[in-house]
Image (cartoon, rainbow, N blue to C red; front, side, top):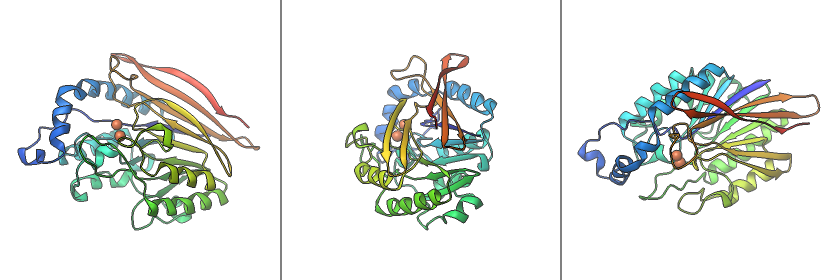
Amino acid sequence: MFTLAHLSDIHLSPVPRAKRRELMSKRVFGYVNWHQGRKFVHRREILNLITSDVVGQKPNHIAVTGDLVNLGLPEEFVRAAEWLHHLGPPARVTAIPGNHDAYVRLHPEAGTRHWRPFMEANDEGAALFPTPATRFPFVRRFGDVAIVALSSAIPTMPFNAAGKVGSVQRAFLAGALDDLARAGLFRVVLIHHPPMRHQAGWHRGLRDAGKFTEILKRHGAELVLHGHIHAQTVHELPTATGTALVIGVPSASEAVEGRIPAARYNIYAIAWTGAGWRVEMVGRAVGGPDHVWECERRVLRER
Ligand SMILES: [Fe+2]
Ligand SMILES: [Fe+2]
């Protein structure tokens, strides 16, 4: 059995003080927005509760699906890297970027480079599917389970949180899903934005959701994990190789009294039964100022 924890939308706080020149961009809107409200929603003490709980549960692996930072300030990327290392070593933690991690166009040296050890293939994954020069998708393999990690993060105009996978990544994704299916692996796809068209509108959703879903339908996947909408959602997508579970998780730092559900993460127990894959999901949520509880336990797939 393989256990995979899924966290998303960290929105690490506090936001470092910004220099005046750093606010000469879309950031100025986000900076005001953060100080007027979002900082009361995404709280460090809540994230700390979730972080210690997930570390204590000792999953085999942890996936973080984006929005680690808020305004894309260089200092935020450094702090997020420290948080990732606290979660676990890069071999046991995989991260992908979200729209907030591409908030403004930033030189990679000042941005997600700090997360690179968490955002690259492992040797077993690269042996099956070498990472293209575009860096995404990359594949990590752990025994019978393979993670295919994508980036839907693109810089956008203010008040726009859309994402896009793009034709190049979609083509590589199709190849990766085929290769991993041939190897008989359980395929987990990581993407920040919800992948299905009805899940978010033009200003917030995945621009190429229709084309992306087509790839999933044609080439198959067992589990698709996403964040971005800060809500727990479960969908089933029929594909050529069986049903894909498409699951979104709430933010890992949402305050209990927030507008949207309190901070939560999920742990998936994935096991080959001899006749097929069994998948059980356990949801763990912040229930008060000092505790995390098991809010849901559900077998999603039984063969
Ligand atoms: Fe988010
Ligand atoms: Fe997002």
